[in-house]
Amino acid sequence: MLKKSILPFLIILILAGAVSCRKPYLLPQPLGEISRQNVIDKHLRDKSLDDVEGLWVWADNNYEVAIIKNPSSHNQPCDYVAIVTDRRDKYWSLGETKMLLKKTAASRLFSTKYYMWAKYDVGTTLVLVHENLIEMSLPTGRYGLLRKTQLIRTYPQGKPQSAAPGSAATGTGFFISEDVVATNHHIIEGRNDITVTVSGTKIPAKILVKDMMNDLALLKVLWKTKDQQQSLGSFPVNIGDVRETKEGDKVFCVGYPLESLLGTHAKISEGIVNSVFGIKDDPREFQISIPIQPGNSGSPLFNEKGQVIGVVSARLKNLYSNSSELLVPQNVNFAVKINYLANLTSLAPDKIALKSGISTRNYTAAQIMSSHGKSVVFIEAKK
Image 1 (cartoon, rainbow, N blue to C red):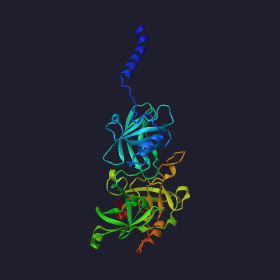
Image 2 (cartoon, rainbow, N blue to C red):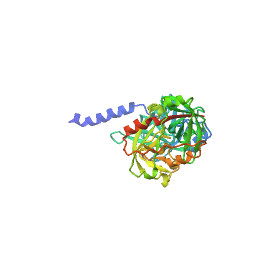
Image 3 (cartoon, one colour):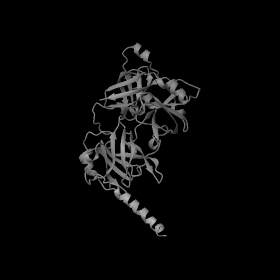
Image 4 (cartoon, helix red, strand yellow):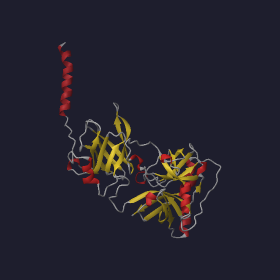
């Protein structure tokens, strides 16, 4: 009887000893207990920032962190540290380290050590899916099921400064004539060293005309010779009538998402038109369910007839940057209607004749890619 009675106490003592043998984790405070404004003033304002640097808030508004270059030898060999600048729970102090980030071969992927509420760490991958949006998967609940966690940039607003003046902006474009490519304005904004990749060959291009308000631009492809153009091939798309587009219509996007990670071959995605209006019922845009990633900017939006009815914009609008609710819609993306691009062509120095072929067949995604994939080009723009 005595042995049975002391058995539970022995188990408790063994467990207590195991816990006491664990090395206590002390969260480093590389900047000390520092306020949000102190971090902005010392590390972010008027600085040349890497894309991932800035203030980021959780979509559920539980935490805000400042991601800055690693300022401390305590956190070696990480490249960036995420420091708590605001929180809703009692487990964290201002200035404590929430994440340690390490660069990878892909510029938008970071190997990450993430500290949970109990201050133990888990490994994950942080993805900068957009200049103002971070995603990563973290264990939740008693079974540790992975859940997507999103962080929204709150500072600096808009596009962060680039640490490398010669760094390239990349995106997608498509031929609307034999020597004119359409794309988004924000890809080429402030840049004049532009190339388009046609059938694996880089060809220089220049800005022909641009429309900042509607985020559109036309590029003139500078073919060396007519023979080069004919050998590589430029295949202008057919332009559709947006008035015939309805909610629920199937649409396709062909582009170059996350080129540094996914490679240099065009990818196709499929979805539907959620609305014939954009943000706050903006009549210039379609709302679409197609997943959009960085690099999809400037992609053509095809309908089932193989006609282009819009130009996809991969930019997350600043609508949510200052929102008190801090809600990020899932799979809600937008495309500028093609008639705004048609209007822009009238401003070009030379007349651009748009194709408007009529089709009675309904294309599958595979058929869209096979028939129209060659019309789509990869764009790289440097300062």
